[in-house]
Image 1 (tube, rainbow, N blue to C red):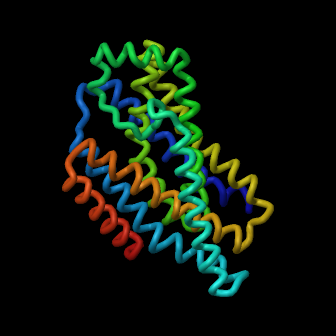
Image 2: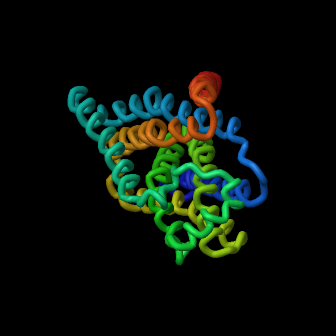
Length: 269
């Protein structure tokens, strides 16, 4: 695979990752969080991820496996890879301390909370540590975006959009504690952008490790694992966060809207 074939995939991964910087901008340059819009957007992102996982990635995985294996073996390997992806991202999420978890809900109004500021200063003497921990969390998302775009650019664009929406509240979660830790809006904004670079970095590392075994079985494992990663992110992180930011019916409206939108898009284009 040559460089021109890799550029669109890595570009999409980079843009999706840098959406964390948009979250940082929102937290530092607005006065209040638009919770209703964010709730719908997060539900929309979950709908896109879930729909794509079950209608595009898992069938694609089975097709890749069937190039090398029997149908029964293909189903078994796809099943194992799917739950391996879930276990991988669940372990990463579990290992993050709760106060560093990027999916802990944050609002821009917290910047005015003096008691919270004192708390974060005690927890984060080195604000950069937070960004590093959250960057680790972003690795699987980068792999998901990159390999999906590598196989099918249209699919990659849809996943990049969903990941980008998902990364906006992550940017808020990064920028607020780092601002309290450092006292600098500039540093908190820079770190929120830098954490997004973990996604293209994860994609590059994943591709480097797997490029020597780029066959049907390897691609089948990747697509099933990516489906597992995205389903877990949607059910464990996006939908609960959407409900916390807004109302249950708004997050469900976003979820159904995301599924309908991406399904129609895949049919038309």
